[in-house]
Amino acid sequence: MKCTKCKGSAILELRRHNAAFCAPDFVAFFKNQVREAIRKYRMFSHDERVLVAVSGGKDSLALWDVLIDEGYDTTGLYLDLGIFDYSVESKARCEAFATSRGVPLVISRVADEVGAPVPVIKQVTRRPPCSGCGLSKRYLMNKAAQDQGIAVVATGHNLDDEAATLFGSVMHWQTDALPRQSPALASTHPKLVRRVKPLYRLSERETAAYAFVRKIDYIVDECPFAKGATSITHKETLNRMEEASPGAKHNFLFGFLEKARPAFERIDGVTLNECTRCGQVTSGTVCAFCKLSDQVKRAG
Amino acid sequence: MKCTKCKGSAILELRRHNAAFCAPDFVAFFKNQVREAIRKYRMFSHDERVLVAVSGGKDSLALWDVLIDEGYDTTGLYLDLGIFDYSVESKARCEAFATSRGVPLVISRVADEVGAPVPVIKQVTRRPPCSGCGLSKRYLMNKAAQDQGIAVVATGHNLDDEAATLFGSVMHWQTDALPRQSPALASTHPKLVRRVKPLYRLSERETAAYAFVRKIDYIVDECPFAKGATSITHKETLNRMEEASPGAKHNFLFGFLEKARPAFERIDGVTLNECTRCGQVTSGTVCAFCKLSDQVKRAG
Image (cartoon, rainbow over all chains, first blue to last red; front, side, top):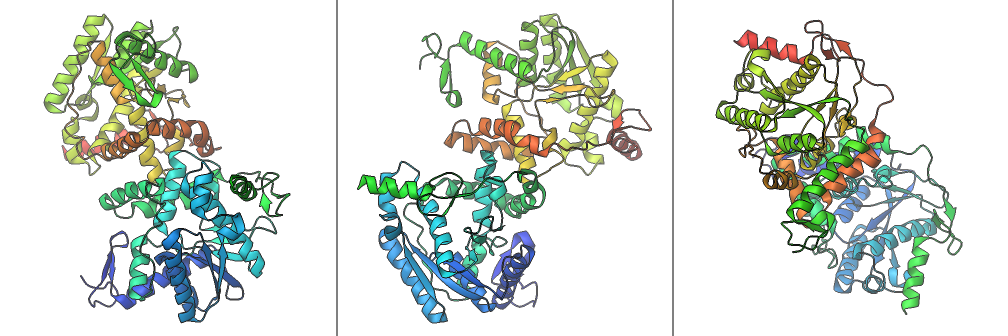
C-alpha cells in the first residue's frame, strides 16, 4: 500500500477518502482536516484563548496537540469525575501532557462542585449513568471557561461520536436535540460560552492513529460506566454500515449538516433565563445542575 | 402466553404493543389498525372504488382481504413483471384469490407497456435492478387507475417497508424523498391518482400472521432480483434494533411522520408537466418511463 501523496510506504488506508498515507503525510492530512473545521465554522482565531476539555483519552489529547502545534493559545481543562482508578490515571495523562508541552491545565473536581463524585451521582439519581455525568460536564466546562475569562470551549468529539449522537436523535426524532447537533454552537447568552468540535471531520480510527504517530500517552480504557451505553450500540450499527459502504458515517453526518439541519432550526429559539440559585443559564427557573446537586445532597 | 383481550391461549406476542392475541382477537386487532390508518389519513371512503395493487405476496393479499371484508368496492391490479416462474406463480395466486372472493382483477403486463419484461430492462439499463422495476410499477399503477376511472391506489407497504425506506432516505438525507414518505400521498395533478398504504401501522410479521390465520394462499418466495438490495440490509439493521428495543421501528417511522416530516415539506412544490410523449405527469419534458421504454427499444 503506497502513500497517495508521496508514493512512499503507507501506514494507514482511509477507504472513505479512497486514500492511504505515510506517517508524515497522515499528520499533514489530519491537521488539514482540523484547519478546515476551524475555518468552515469560524470556531476561533489566533487572537483568542481556547479552553480545551481533555479527558486523558486519544481524541481530546490529539486535539490539544494539534491546536498547540498550530500556534493557538490553549488552556487545558480536566474535569475530575472521581471514577476510581479510571479518573486517577486519566488525570495523570493530562498532567503529564500539559507539563511536557509547557501549557496550562485547569482541574475542576465534580465532587467539589456537585457534592459527590460520578459513582455516587449514578446511585442517587435514577438517570442512566452517562446522563448525570454529561450534564455535569457541560455545566462545569461552561463555568470553568467563564472563570478563566475564555470565550470558547473545544471538545474532542470525533466523526464517530457525532454520527452516533445524530443516529440516536434521528431514531427517536428528538427535534429539540437535532438543531443543537453542530460542530459549532454559538454563544446565545452572555453566560453561555461558544462550544466547538474541531475533530468532527475525523474518525475515531484516525484520532487513534494520530495519537499513535505523535507518541501521545493516552488512557486506552473506556470509562467503566460506558458499558452498555446506547451510544456504543449506535456506533456498532454505524460501523457495520461503514464496513459495507465506506463513507456511510461521513455522508450521514455531513448530509445532515448541509441539507437537513436547517430544516430543524427553530424560528423561535428557547428563552434563556439565569438560574435563581447559581446564576448560570437555564430554560427554567432552577437549572438542571442545581437540581442534581440538591438530589445528591438530600441523599446525603 | 395468554390473549390480552380474552385471556384464552395466544398465538402471537406483539412486544412493541406489550400484548398477545388469540387468532380471532389478532384479526380484530389487525383490522382495527387498518381502519385507524384509513381514518387518520382519510385514505378513501365506502363511496369510491379502490384499486388494490397486488403482487401475490402476503402483504398485498392481506390488504385486499381486509378491504373486501370491510365492505370497500375494490378492484385488484396485478402488474406482470415477467420475472420467470416468480411472476407465473404470483399471478396465479392473485387470480385464485380474486376468483375465490368474487372480485375483479385487472392485469397489466410490463412487457407490453415498456417493450420488454423486467429481466431485460435490468440488463439494458445500468440502474440497480429494483430501480427500473419500481419506476415502471409506479407509472403503470397510476395509468391503470386512470384507465379504470379509479381515483386511489392502495399498496401493501407495511411498517417494515416504510421504516426501511425512511432509514435509507435518512442515511443519505435525501431531502427530495423525505417529504414524499407518507402513508397517503394526495393527488397533486389531475393525472396523478392518490396513493395510500393502509398497512403502514402493521409489521411484516403481523401481515404474515394475518395471511396465515386467514388461510390466504400467497407466494412465499422473494423476487429473485431482490437479493442484495439495500432495502434488505436496512431491514436487517432495523430488525437488530427492534430486537434490542421493541418498538424501535414504530417510533422511528411514527416519530418522523409526527415530528420531522413537516420540517421537510417544501413551501414551493415541484412544477408538474405532462410528458410530451405519453401525456402522463413528469417534472421534466419527457417522463422517466418513456425514457426507459426508449432505452429498451434501442437496445432491443
